[in-house]
Length: 560
Image 1 (cartoon, rainbow, N blue to C red):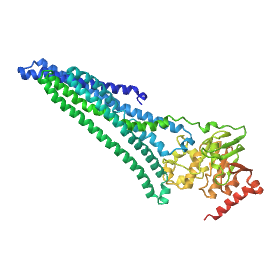
Image 2: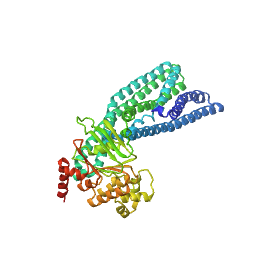
Image 3: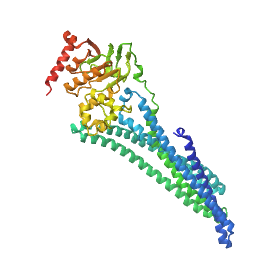
Image 4: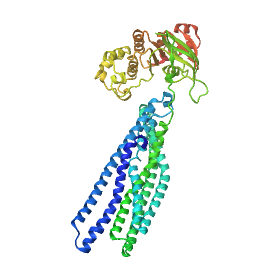
């Protein structure tokens, strides 16, 4: 992480080093003032003014430098921490954006959101205390040498406590590591669970599953609580030991130091500076412990972030699509596709050629591979074998009309600005202009999350208008008009024929009225093309196609 922004981190460490050296120097200043100002005043009754001023200047100068080091350390440590957090978050988001649809389909959305949020924040939590911790290491080395040089006996006693504290830190880190890892994993699971619950809030309400969802999320939250309680319990014990051990040694140094002063081995100033130095080291030593206590937490977040950053970008299925021959809007050449983990292919040996400007209906029973075929043409999936070729730009409208929580205009444009007349023309083609004009603010009406303020048919028509405003050469409709009444559906398809006469349209359909409006029909069964021709010809031929359409008719007649 430091390699991401080394300069600001180096400045933070430099400020911390100034603080460390000034801390050691302050102990020497205390020693000098006691031996050269305070004791002579008691023993001789007076001290030269120049000596007093010199002592004051020494203390104040070291204090000012020490304060400046603190300001520099804290400022640039914070800058380092949050710049690294931004870099990691940007990196994760960039990876998520660059990974293709199949990669996302294998992962929970909430889990991926956690990698760019709580995991990135957790991974950088160790950066803030590191400059202080490194300065403490410098302080220990310099102070240890200074204390041993001042008095070998006292110095060795003081320095002997450092290995004890280091061992204590290492033991703590190893024991607490698993608790932080578990907590971070459960936090990702909770994020995914909450995201899933909000996504399916209508389903949960419809089936009265609120208690079930509450229990499920409460169980995950309880695992997080238990892991963190265990970690905090260990941390409390660890910090108590960090407090008790140095304090106990400090008392021993006072007792031993008093004997050394009585025997004339050290001066009162040297002992005072010595004790002052050791006392100053107690808090920084705890900061090393703080850095080490944050390390397992950061490692847990870092590991989860790296799983996204280190994963290779999978090939974009859209790049496998070629260019159709002149005069054709779509070509499928012996296309086969199967999902991972399945024995049988979803589609097998699909070959099809569609001239420009034709409307093709894809028909078949549930599980025949209709949506998969559309997604292959759209470049969301890549064929296992065979080739997909298209002419020009394509646009896909899904069966579920997904809308963002912004305005109608923002949902139609999705970052690409259009003139109002272009937006209204697209809305008119989708038979959506009338209800949009009736909205409180027209194009600037906020539709709410997922278009919650609109009906299913209105959402579908806005999703269709979003594709139409781009004037695609190939329009793919995955049962897009299923939520529309037959009259509105016929109007929409008529508008498409009139306004997009040169565009190729491929639509998945289940209504006989919709199928009959197509120029040609592709009948899928068991992932293969069972029949291909006009609706009238296929009906006349009978067989599976006619049985399927008659079943559609029966189903429509049975609807209330």
